Image (cartoon, rainbow, N blue to C red; front, side):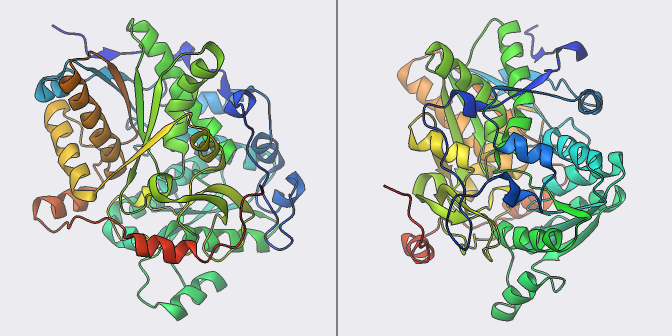
Amino acid sequence: MKSRKITLSEKEIPNHWYNIVADMPNKPLPPLHPGTKEPIGPEALAPLFPMELIMQEVSAEKWIEIPEEVRDVYTMWRPTPMFRAHGLEKALDTPAKIYYKYEGVSPSGSHKPNTAVAQAYYNMKEGVKRITTETGAGQWGSALSFACNHFGIECEVYMVKISYHHKPYRKLMMNTWGANVYASPSDRTEAGRKILASDPDSPGSLGIAISEAVELAAQDPDTKYSLGSVLNHVLLHQTVLGQEALAQMEKAGDMPDVVVAPFGGGSNFAGIAFPFLRLNLEEGRSIRCVASEPASCPKLTRGVFRYDFGDTVGMTPLLPMYTLGHNFVPAPIHAGGLRYHGAGVVVSQLLKDNLIEAVSHDNLEVFDAGVQFARAEGIIPAPEATHAVATVIQEANRCKLEGKSETILLNLCGHGNFDMKAYEDYFAGNLVKHEVTSEEIEASLAELDTPIPG
C-alpha cells in the first residue's frame, strides 16, 4: 500500500519563526504617515499593537524565538500532517507528484491560529483588555476568538457583511469562544456609518471592516487591534507551517519544484512559501513559489505597485504594495478571505523582484477544482483553498503535457465544513463566472495619489 501521510513528532515543532526580510535582496520600502506622507517609525504603531509585535514588524533578524507559552498552545494541533495526494494524481493521470500540507486540523479549522495565538499572547503580556479585528470568511475571526479566549482577552470582530450572512456557523464559532461579532459596515463606528450613508446595501469588504476595527482600537488605551494577514509580523508567525513542511518533504525524500498557496493578503502564501524561498536565496535553488488569487480581486496579477492605505477610510499608514485601490469593493464571491484590495508589503516586494509568481482563477474554475480534490482526497477544501487547488491542477496538467515528473506542494490552508453554502450555490448552478473589468480597476486606481519614489 502506498504511504500517504508524512508526520512529525511534537518535538519537531519549530522553535523560531523565519523572517524573510533578513534575506531579501531589496528590503521593503517604509510605511508613510497618512497625513504628512513621511516615513514613520515604530512609535506610530503603538496605539494599535503591543510593542513586541511592533518590534517584530520592523525587525531585520532572521530568526525570532517562539515563546514557550505559544509553542505549548501550538501542541494542541501542531505539527500538522502532510499527505501525498495519490488520489488526485491518479484522477489527473499526471506524472507529477502532489503533496499537501493540511492546516484544517487546527481548532478553528485553518492556518490562522498560528499567528492568532502569538498575537493574543503578546497582547496579554502587555495587559491589553480587548482586541478588535476584522474577518472576511470568518477563519481569522474564529482563530482570534479561540486565542483570545485562551489568554483571557475580550474579542470584538467586524465581519464582512456578505460573509456574515453566508457563513452563520463561523459567527457562532466566534460566539462560542466568547467573541462579539458584528456585520460590517456597521452603525457602531464613524467609518461604518459613513459607508452606509453612501451605500446602505454595501456588501462590505475587508478594507471597510479594517477601518471599523482600527477606529475602535485607536480610541481606547485598553484596546489593541489585530490583523490576520498583510503585515510582516503576521507573515513570519505563519512560517511555522512552512518549516514543518520542509522537514516533512525531507523525511519523504523529496523536495518541491513548485509551492502553491491561496493569496488574500499574504499570510497563507508566506507561511508555506517563505521557508522554501529561503533555500532559493541562501543556496541558489530554483523552487517556484506561486500565489493563487481570485480573478474577482486580482491585485497581484492586475494591480499596480503603489503606496496605498490598508483600509478603505484611510486610517492606516500608507503601505508600498500591489493594490487595486483602497476603495475597491470586490464582488461578493464566496472566498471571503481573499477579498482584500492589497497585498502584504513583503510579498509585494518579492513579486516586484520576480522572486515569486502569481496567477488568478475565476470563481467557477476554483469550485470545479475543489470538488475534484474532495472526490479524490476526501477533504472538502475551504473556498479560499480551492484557488490553490486550481493552480495545482493547472501545474499537474502542464507536467502531463510536457512529460515532466515535477513535485508540487500545496498549502491546503483549511477545510470547507462551515462553507457549505458556497458548495450548495455551486451545485445549484447559482454561481456566475466573474472577473473584474479593466474599467473597474482603472476607476479605483485613479483615486491613488501617492506614487512609489523614483
